[in-house]
Each structure stands twice: as structure tokens, then as C-alpha cells.
View 1 (spheres, rainbow, N blue to C red):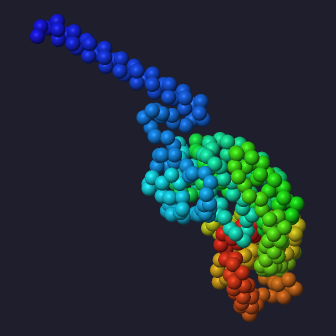
View 2 (view 1 turned 90 degrees about the horizontal axis):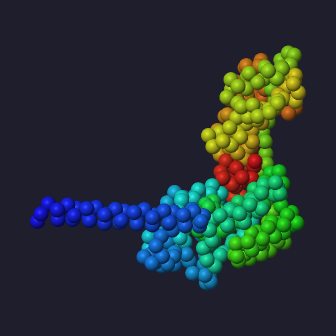
View 3 (view 1 turned 45 degrees about the vertical axis):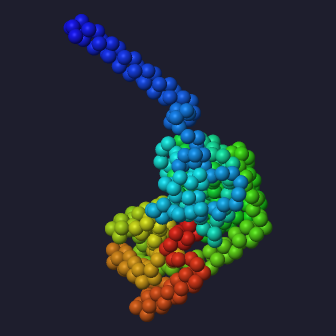
Length: 365
């Protein structure tokens, strides 16, 4: 073969390779533009890829009774009737293009009114986010509202992600806490807001029994009030009074944080408020140290930290520790308080409220 033929073959090969690369570049550019027009989702080749319902992450078929998957905080995937993400079952939803943020909210049948929204076909995450904005507006509800969607790929409830596609959602509102409880009118208003959200998504939503939910809210309020106990110790000045600056310095040395004028707090490892110190005025002869009983998990720890902190503050401020009737607190008084706390904690656990647990933290805020 002559040198001319070899050169021509090399040139032809380079041209073909160039045309192939240019074609692939144009294809990727077009797919990227289509992806941007469809909300950022990755667009594939419709002729080469199976339809969404046939993919391993396909959406569940519409119709038919399905048991709802309850929200979980487990780190492992939850086995359910929706199937496992690797089993090829059509009961899973399409995998989102980006990992959605898992919800910290866990459904509690005692605390929450939960309504389920069910779409006949997968709906994009942007639509879920837009439809839920009026519902989760914190200004219109007296208690926390949660809105989560089912991520079929991760097998967990998550916050809607704008790149995801979902068919199922939960809208929930807490019934009561130590400050307030839902009235029947507020429950009806919440149910109406959920129906509007469902309508915007083309979803089905069963209406709640408003009368029953209102009765549950009132009962939860009574249960919450039953255990809403604070144990206080008064620190009394031996002579004169203290300024706010003096108390602030003593509180800081004791590891307490200033939350507002004349008030300091001590938080536990989970961030829950453990103890609160308060002054009645900018210059005062007494200050009050209070233990928020439901926020503490162990009665021995609660009593120990209450008395340990009061003794530390008393030593720094030159104070004596007294009860509400100005009687000095002695060892016998401390043992009596601990025994009362032990009895109260037993009643809380019997009522289904674990002191210092997730349910107690949601109720006593």
C-alpha cells in the first residue's frame, strides 16, 4: 500500500471520528436543554429506555387498597407493602434525581391529626412544594404542621425535593402542647387547607371526623396539663440584694445560657431546656431556679442536677436555699422531692409519655 493511500485512510478515519464526537456533543447539549425545561430532571432516550411503570423505581398502580407506611426515623430501609427498591416491583415510585432530605417528624397517633394524600400518578416535587406552601405557613396555625412525601427509592418519608416525583403525602398538625390545643374550628380550617392542597395536586384525601379529632385534642390537653410540673428552689440573699450583672456572672460560671433579660437556662445534650433561672427584677433579694420535670428522663439525674446547681449558685452569690414558704431546704426535703418526682415519672410512663422522650419534647415546649 502506497503512502498516499495510508494518508487518505488516516484522514478518513479522523473525519469519521470527528463527526461521531460532534454528533454526541450535539445530542448531550439537546438533552441538557430538555432537562432544564422539565424542571432539571435528567432526560433519557425514550426509544431505548423502558416506560416509568416498567422501571425498578416505577410508581405504584392507581386504585386498590394499600396500607400506609408510617413515618420512621430508622436508619435502615423499611420493609413494606410498597416493595423493596431492588425487587423490580411496580409499587415503588420513580427515583428522584437528587437525594431528598429525610423528615425529622415522626407520626404519633396520640399527638397528631394526620391526613393522607394519594395521587393516581407520580407528580413532580415542584408541584408538591408549591401546593404545600399555604398549608405549612406557620403564621396561621397555633401548633406545628408537617408535610412529608413518600420516597419509594429510599423507602422513607422525606421533605419534597424539586427533582423528585411522588404519589403519596402526609399532612399533619399537632393536637396540643403545654400552651394550647386545637379547637374544632381550627381542625376544620386545617382539613380545608389540606383539601385545597390535594386539589392542586389532583390527589384524593379522605376528610377527618372533626368532632372526634377535637375530642382527642381536648383529652390530650388534659393529659399534658396533668404532668406539666415544675419543681422550684428559691435562692435568698443573706444580706442586701443582687444586681442582674451579678446573677448573670454566676449563671455563666454555672454553665447556663442567657435567653432574655432576667432569665437563664441550662440545656441537656439533646438541646432540651433542663433548668431555668429567673429574677423578678433587675435588683432582687431572691431568684428562682426551676426544673422542667417532663423534659428530664431520669429522676435521679433531675434531682441531682437541680440541687447541685442550686448549691453552686448559692455559694457564688452568698445565698441560702429555701422552698416556696421560705423554709430552708435540708437533706430530708431533698429526699421528699426526689420521691415525689419518682412517683410522677411512673404515672407519666403509665400514660404513654416517656419523660425526656420524643413525645415529651413535643408536648412540653
